Length: 251
Image (cartoon, rainbow, N blue to C red; front, side, top):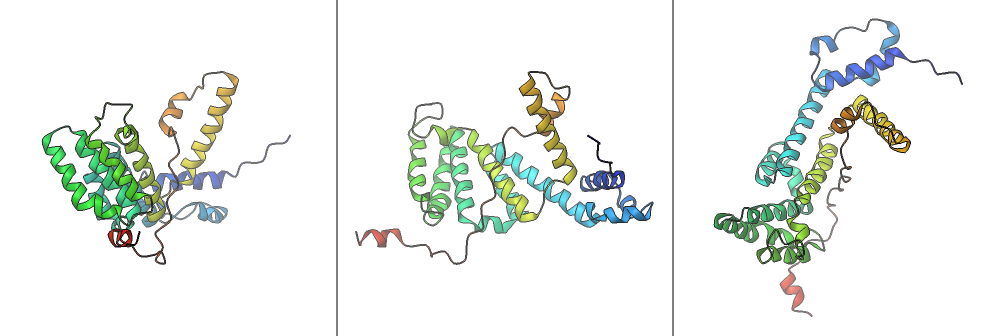
C-alpha cells in the first residue's frame, strides 16, 4: 500500500502552534511572515500570540489548582478559584464537594485545632451548602459526619472512602475538567496527538509482551486515569431551594 505524502508545512505549523502555546517561542517569531505562500493555508493550525499566551496562563493556573487539591490544601485551591474563576464557586454542587473535602482535611490533621476548624467548616459552610447542592447532598452530609467517630486508619469504617486520599485526586480531576471547559484552556493539538499515538504504542507493546523503548515518555506524558467530564452549569430554571424543616412538618 502506498504511503500518503506528508504535508510538512502543516506539520511545521502544528509544532509552532504547540511551541507558542507553551511559551517556548517569542511573539516576534510567531508574528513573522510565512516563508512561502502555501504555508498561509495552514494558518488555522496556529493561534494568535495573545490567545496562545492566555491559554498557557490558564493551563498553568489549572495545574496550580490541581496540585493544591491533590495535596489536600483546599483553602489554597479555593483562593486560586476565587482569583481566576470565581463563577465556578457559584455552582453549589462543586462548592459542596470542595467544602466536604475541606472538612475531611481539617480532621485528617488529628489535632484539636484541626477538629475545631472542621466544626467551624461544618457549621458555616458545609451544612448550609448541603441543603441545596443536589438531592443526595444532605444524605452525604449526614454520612460524612461519621468521620468524627471513625478513625482515618480504620479501613472497615463506613466512611473509609471519605478518608481515602484518592478523594483528593477525584476532586482535583473534576475541577480540572470544569476549569478547562470554563476557561477554554485545552491542550494544544500536537500534545494531544502525541499522547494518542503513545497510547496506541503502549497498547501494542502490552499485547505483544514487549518493553516499550519509550516507556519513560509513556510514564511522563500519560495520566494514569482520565479526568471525569466537566459537569454542566447549574440551570437558571432549576427549582429553588426549599426549607427542609417546613417540608418535614407536612409529613
